[in-house]
Length: 244
Image (cartoon, rainbow, N blue to C red; front, side):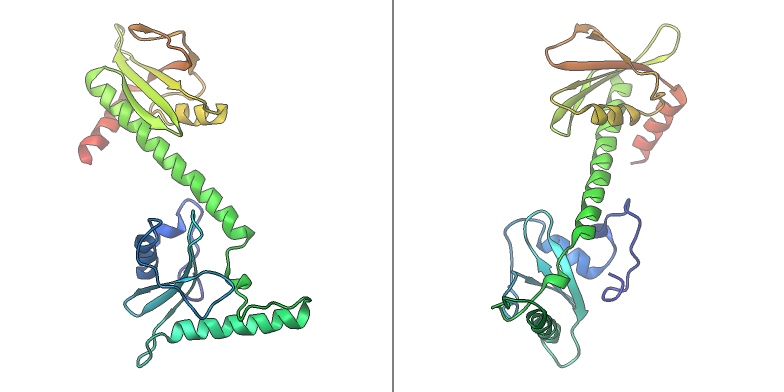
């Protein structure tokens, strides 16, 4: 990123695949699905790598499932078709020679790409970003059903982490805003706590377990919690919905 793409490494809440760079964008699109156009870098024989090209940018991608890794990048020089890939293979051949000089038995491949591949720091970063992505998805799902119920007072549902979330938001006789939230499915306690914290305008410490949803009894496997919502937060949420 720093040396080849000229980018700063952002904080973990800014996923690397979302950075604004033509090569990253091209790699995202090309390797977003398991099948599609693939051109292998034949001069690298110790790992399966594919070419990604856009404008003058050239990159090498290791497509090993979830995720794929953009492991090297450069630019095509004027008058040369694929000089980046030739230079990459030459560097990996030199790495193979260094490895064989220091280790036994020697590698039988022509190249050694180990130093270019994702390491533990990269995998740790990816797992942290996966948590950020999940939090975004949860927030969007929670806000969607809360907004929908604010508009009609009925129960609305969404899928969250393999479970089903249902939310009812209703006004009470004393002009308070009552929220009932239910979850069905095998969900760890820490995920339940995160979901409850994402409901706008509700004190995360005042959620109370219930034995029924409004106007219906508890169903098998349901966890139900209730709280009061700050009306101002409800209004802001609806304003945001109108703004989108």
